[in-house]
Amino acid sequence: MATGIFLGFASACGGGGGGGVVLTPGTVDITVDAGEVARTLAISTEFFAPDDCAIVEGLVPTPGARRLLRFSTSIANYGALDLVVGDPTNPIPPLVALDFQLSPCHGHRHFEGWAEYSLEDELGQVVGSGHKQAFCLRDSSQFFGPATTYDFTCEFQGISSGHHDLYASHLDGQWIDITEVPAGSYVLVVTANAAEKIVEVDDRYPNTVRVPVVIPP
Image 1: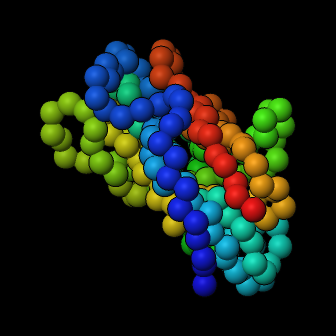
Image 2 (image 1 turned 180 degrees about the vertical axis):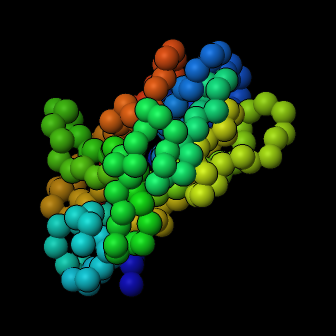
Image 3 (image 1 turned 90 degrees about the vertical axis):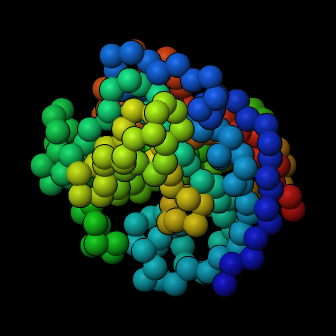
């Protein structure tokens, strides 16, 4: 069973919603919605069994009770071109099948290096880290432009121009383990396209956002 503290910080820098967005012409342009991260911040204490997928995949270091900083990540395509991944077993170049690692625990392929998370103290030192085990880049919702159908699914992956791919806070990996992190003021750093496997010819919108966090005792 998990117990939680909802943090709900409203301020953040970088990224943003769809209001006033001008799509970057002639390219894919990925960004992170800082507001979504800030709105969904919450601290929970959760128990992990030794055979839990989070233990098997190294998302938490040891079984037992762990304190987690959870949050949702919304990754948007602000470019005029669709981000096309395709079938993970035979993706669209320059991606290759080895960019997707099969997880026996979850039973699906993870896109390696898609999103990374870290927690920094007031001196900029990293005190905690995590990464999103992305398995399905798809159109979760539209934020900009005329209404269109969602073109991408788990079978043929991607993010359409003007659409978001949302990873909700309840999913595995949508956290930083803060069990050993003292109370205090920190900054949560979220980076999309961390390994730069997706080509962004004109990268106008930031791939990294920084969200302030206060961890209570």
